[in-house]
Image (cartoon, rainbow, N blue to C red; front, top):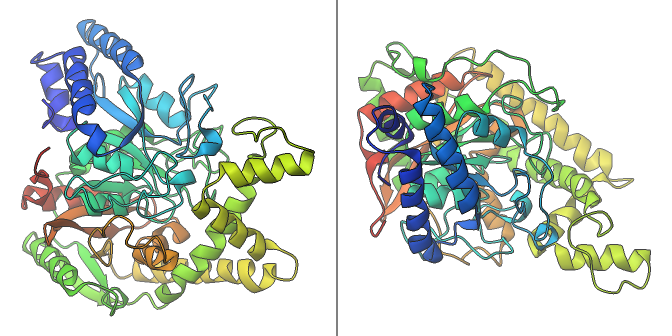
Length: 483
């Protein structure tokens, strides 16, 4: 049963081939057996899962149906879950039990999804390798000596290892798409505002977006259907009708205009990945797509702009963790200043401290105009590049990452080298566009992903292209040895 996709689980439950309770018990046993070598979970919620599975079976017995009714999933550990530890991968929140459910958690629970647990992540979603977690690094199931990508690496590793069919993630600069690429999954970052951020612990509020991680585009469509929609509790949520994503999967690609930016094929891209990207272009051309070269001239400025804006917003968002109201509090503070300093110094890890410092500096008097304001102007130029490109093409295609997964610890002494792994993904966050990564081959036995970008609210188009590609390729069906 662990090899079943979400779509296959929905059909199996509907045909009474197995119950949600049987499936849940099977997967919980599999997690207990295999996760110690991956470290993909922070918390398991066995009691809640079995309770939700029994409830889902009862709802089906009463005639209810639904693609997510009884389907097992997991949540990245920054989605608040009532009465369950929500740690954000940090010592700062190791003892925090959320008093409410995030909107995404509540919506999926209402749809009948079964929560197996909370997945490991980079601390406060800051990282590209899932090595900054207070609970230790997550291992890539394709090679346990390599990183799974971050910050949603726990969700990605768990799904790739067939511990469960799908999981939620969040994407601030590529944190769904990059781990999807490095673990042979399909991962979707929706349009900014498409999925509610209420109850999702913030890293950078103008960039963060929740989305699905699964093995196929079809499964991502099912999970996104349950996650998406307007939320009056989130001031950045957009009141836009949610289409039936599964209904658009089988549309023809005849005449689809695909743009391939020349800036993507620079010296930093592994040539073997470039070859796989072009092979995916050829596969889509055979399905009727038309391909043309385009330009995104301001892409070169994306990383510097992102690493001013994101840390600036992080320094503001994380100021609430002060040792006073909730979370970690230092022992025997001498005074209020000592309480603040030691609680934050002991509660935050090195990567979080680094980004808070960078952000506080960029927002400080005398530097705000030189850094933060300038970065926001570059952000607008990047968005304008995309708007101009989408006047010529329907989607943009390129590599998700410049390299395959690197060895654990290989970039720890050089944070900038890790930041450069986000070069192809962060532009979608800066512009607020939807982006998807899909499996496209292997380099040295490690997975490679291809990224698709589309205009605002065109998630259905991305899922359609990825699904048609997956009907004609088998990369997404490959399973890591031992899992």
